[in-house]
Length: 110
Image (tube, one colour):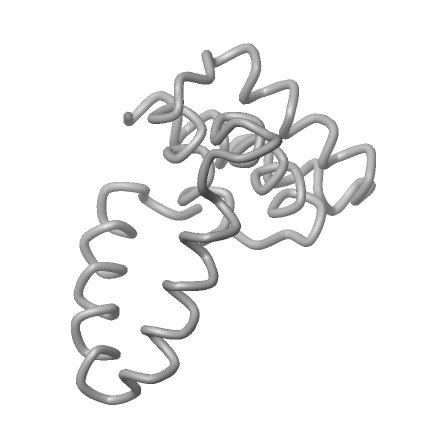
């Protein structure tokens, strides 16, 4: 199971090295991400909860850690986060269910 604290440190280092190795990819994706995830018809909290549910459904551990933290930072409470993750399980089935402990672990370490 991923260690969220270690993940964030390694992720930051990876982004720094990506800034040098593939700046257009990093800049392009960051611009797209910031525009889509900004406040709009949906509030940021809702967008982060949707992203978390999709991350669980597609079994992306990195997405789960990033969007659990993003949802919490946007004001989602633990119950909302776990409910969104549970929706991801409905969409992703049994394999997605095995990622719920990672959501809980990340929440506990925030």
